[in-house]
Amino acid sequence: MMQKLDLTKTDKTYYSAKSVPQLVNLQPARYISIQGKGDPDGLAFGTNVQALYATAYLLKFVHKANGNDFTVPKLEGLWWYDKELQPLMELANTPVAIPREQWHYRLLIRLPDFVTTDEILTATAKVVSEKQLSQAQNVKYFELHEGKCIQIMHTGPFSEEPRTLAIIASFAKQHQLEQNGYHHEIYLSDFRKTPSEKLRTILREPVK
Image (cartoon, rainbow, N blue to C red; front, side, top):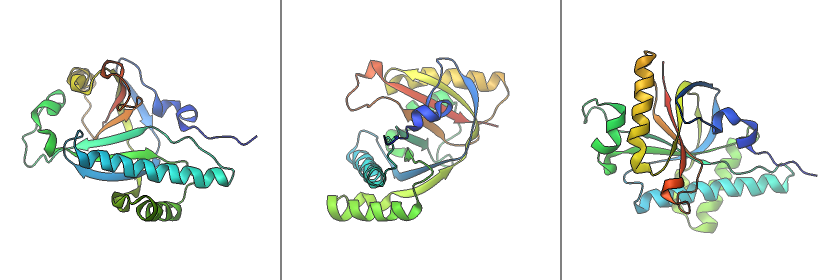
């Protein structure tokens, strides 16, 4: 019987978190990604998510046909803002203080090691031509090595993330750790279908 690779099961450190902050040390990982800017409730964000998933599932089906199937991993996002235009502020305040249209993001879906960059290029071209999703031309291969991170499980609406970010900030201050990368979220729940009070999101902050 053909084995299906599920990264959420083979890399539990990456895809699990506790309800209290903890330090983890993460290895390099490979993704397909798409960058954007603006309100995550906006049309452009939704189109970017669609293009990313269409590419991921095409790669999955290609490898399934070759006897190397895998489960498409969870959606992730790196978030940042232009600190030259905005004064430095506490981590917990940024989701409220920075207008949603000023947030930059990089959406990610993690890849198994056997997916090649050439296969990604072929897949994005197919999504553009066959599914008429022009945004797929902006889907690119991406590598990330965050190393040491503080992470915590946030349960509930995205609007309540500041209270969880405050816990991370307090932990960082207690252990004399400084931010060392972009704010990282892993969406364990499908936010299109899951009631907001039941959403489970890993919040991760690279530190040094």
